[in-house]
Length: 127
Image (cartoon, rainbow, N blue to C red; front, side, top):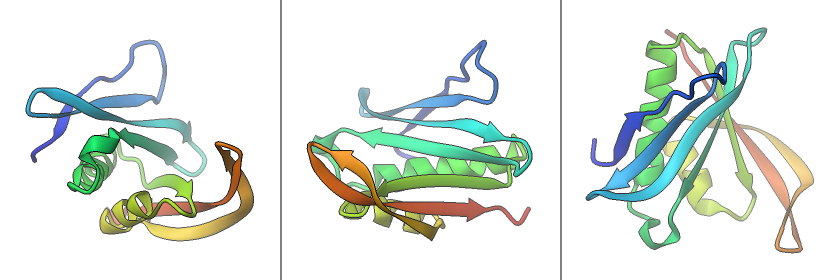
């Protein structure tokens, strides 16, 4: 594993997990899991990678590591994530991490005055 930092499980916030993503001693992003749903045994994952290190596989690696941690160590069965329809990098990272697109929410996101469809992805553990 080349980039994922140590887990920083937040004290006082149940079912929230946060990690720093580092490369060569520099913070290049963050990834977290939040909004745990006990009925579905699911949690949402969100991540952000610095633009100057895009296209190096860090998002995919972080997603794979977090999905593995949440399934194996926390027993969470379903992970969800989403991106804007034009965000091909995030879409590709989620697909490479084993997530499948399960929904499209039309015109659900506004970014810098532009409207985008929201692509919703899901990973279901078979452990």
